[in-house]
Every structure is written in structure tokens, then in C-alpha cells.
Amino acid sequence: MTIDFQKSNGLVPAIIQDVYSSKVLMLGYMNEEAFAKTKEIGKVTFYSRSKNRLWTKGEESGNFLIVKDIEKDIMLDCDSDTLLIKVEPVGTVCHTGSDTCWNEKNEGDFAFLHFLQQFIQKRFVEMPEGSYTTSLFNKGINRMAQKVGEEAVETVIEATNGTEEGFLYEASDLMYHLIVLLTSKGYSLNDLGRELKKRHK
Image 1: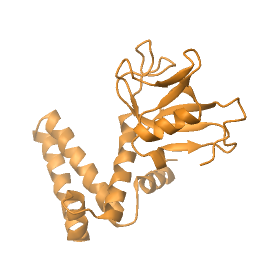
Image 2: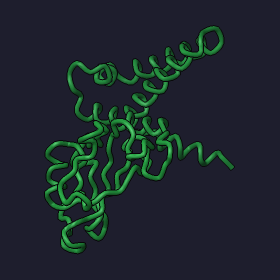
Image 3: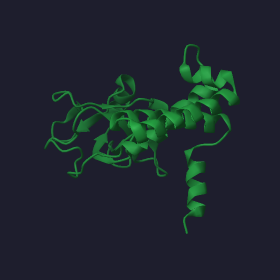
């Protein structure tokens, strides 16, 4: 990644986006030193134009912007002069107490399904020992399909004769095991979305 810091007198804008919800949280500026420190410590660090120094977001409030995967979650635009950084925010982002600097609520837990899918796909590639997901892949397609069936039955039981909390718990188990099964078959939630979109006339 070669960033053109010279185009704007040593600074480039950095757009900060929630890695789970995809909500744009704020905009800051980085120089080469700020970018290097961000990569080093895994917390977004800007160059403060008002303070004329490096400023790690959250250094006073504790509301850091955590970069989980330096290689994947920092991207450079087509002109090499603007950064997009995907983060996991700790607390609110704006100094006003708002979730974003545009006074928006940062809601969108549905996007976590995309993160979970990526996590499961990574497990499928790396197959680390001691992982429950790895053990499912190792047991084969029949066992994975059986688990989806078991979780579906438990979801139905909770829906008809259980509690609301139990229903959500079992439905979550069902979704997790379905993503595992999809992954093992070479599919993803995007494929389900594509199929459902075709049916939606």
C-alpha cells in the first residue's frame, strides 16, 4: 500500500467505518506517522490539526477505535489519497456522546452475520484444533446436516411451547449451524440472498 501523502501537504483523509454495521462513524486525517502508529498499536491514530500532534482516538475518553485486522480492514482508494478503515468502536465515537459524528445511531447487528460467515469460512480454511466449528467440518456433511435439523426442531419447540429468550437462543444456534453447512457446500449467505431475490417479484 503506497499512500500519496504529498497531494494534500502530508495529510490524507481517513474515513472510519464500523466493521460490523458498515455505518460511517467519523472522518479524520492522518500523516505518515499517524498511519504507522495505527498499524503498530491497532488503534486508530490521527494527526490533530488543532493540536498539531498525533492523537489516538480515545486516549482521554477510553472510546478507542480498534482495528482488528490491519491487512484486511485498512483500504486505500483508487487515487491513493484517501483511506477507509474498518473498526470495532469501543463506546461512542463523537465528542458529543453520539454514536457517530453525524448524530446517527450505530445500529445494525444484522451485519454481524457477515462477520460470522467470514469467521466460519476462515475456520474452514485453517481448521484449527480445539475449535467446535472445526470439529463439525471434520465430522462431515451428514453430521452438519443433522445438526441443522436438530437445531430447527429445538427452534420450533421453543417457538410453540418455550420462552422468547429460549426461542432466540435456539434460532441463533440454527443460523450458526446453517452457515457452517452452507460453507461446507461451498455457498454463503450471499447465495441465499441471490436465490431469495430471484423469487421476489
